[in-house]
Image (cartoon, protein in one colour):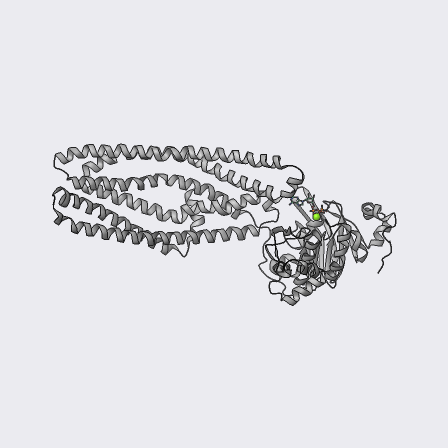
Length: 585
Ligand SMILES: Nc1ncnc2c1ncn2[C@@H]1O[C@H](COP(=O)(O)OP(=O)(O)OP(=O)(O)O)[C@@H](O)[C@H]1O
Ligand SMILES: [Mg+2]
């Protein structure tokens, strides 16, 4: 990205604060002016009080100097506070925007980038852009104006001496130019490696238990170490360039100052400049150099910012998975008629995940979806909730294409019970009402009863007010699942999508959640994705998927008797008659 593109893209986030930014710049300019005057008063003191040996010439410039310092300090304080305010508000706005956008991307997006990398983009990269676009604008402007003002003041003191000092300016430019190219590459590498290492650490810690159980600590450490080594290399490459910069500039600066002093001695002798004048001149030059240096380093800020801006723009430009409809066709609570009509979908081109899948679930009916692993079952759940849209075919809720239902309304009507129960940091109560923040304590308790969760919740140290750890590690699998069921009950939607609600639970625990599940499903349109046959005889219809296609449809009986795919999948569990072929209702 060019600087222009970065500004066109990100400067709008300063909107509303532009006046503040201008005001901050003005305050900082007043500070520059007060410095100019303060240095001049020093020259006055030197010539009229020190050299003349007369205290009378001291008071006025001394008072002025003190006054200027107080004024300068005050405006500098105010200017920096304002700049910081604008900068932080910019950061907040851009962070919120990026996060909101990332939330609307397809669910597999964070897998592609790695959570850690997204975190790095959300923090460091946004900071780098801010350094250019918000506070950077003020700082650059003030540095430029200061450089001009101090240069002009130096020329006004003694143009011969000032010009002699400026003669070394091209040296600065050469140094700056030489560094900028190297720094651009180094900055980009550093940002990328930074994202990678965050992702690797995040992954290792997230899978902590497996890492330990499989004795893969050293492999995991090695993985982090390798990223660490890349980071070290990138950082050192960056340090090599930027560490050399300051000393080199410093040497250039000293050469200039010494030259001026030598030339100055001669000029004083010739009477063309006073001692005070010479001191003021070196003062102006001393104030001038840091600003020139800052301007020289501008390239560094720009390089870091453009590298980061590219990474943020990449996120912001990632297409969102599904669009809200322009026109809303329905409102309110659905009856719960769900229809899939010749639905096809593929995550990657040429590898169909679903092909021509059709089935209908009438309001209140219970349809079980089963099939081998990878057959496309969870994909159906994702399409129903519109995490993705079908490539072909339509899904209807109450007869309306769900692409014409707002995402909010759609998801207010369908509750998904994912296989992995999400537990959030907070109390049990907070977790239960996650899907319905306005639920009363009575409703929460009723839902917990129905989900067979009340008892174990009361056995927790502080009952409903017990803090749950992130990922719910202080709960067993079955307990987590019952929390999820209670949460789903509270949402009370007409349509339920359950993705393997008993997977990962042992036989006994699984049968314990059957009662709660049946209570949850009662009266709701339910699509249950499962390999577990416990509820098979309850199902009004079973849809058997195979390689993304509907292989068979029927009741448990019909499918067992049909001796097709269903029988092939579950025959071993049916043949020794551990499972009654006739429903026991
Ligand atoms: N994010 C993704 N990107 C690419 N391919 C995917 C993605 N998610 C799933 N797939 C592929 O789509 C196909 C269907 O996946 P799906 O998750 O629907 O299977 P499933 O029937 O739910 O399997 P399981 O019983 O193992 O949960 C699989 O071949 C899978 O590899
Ligand atoms: Mg699945």
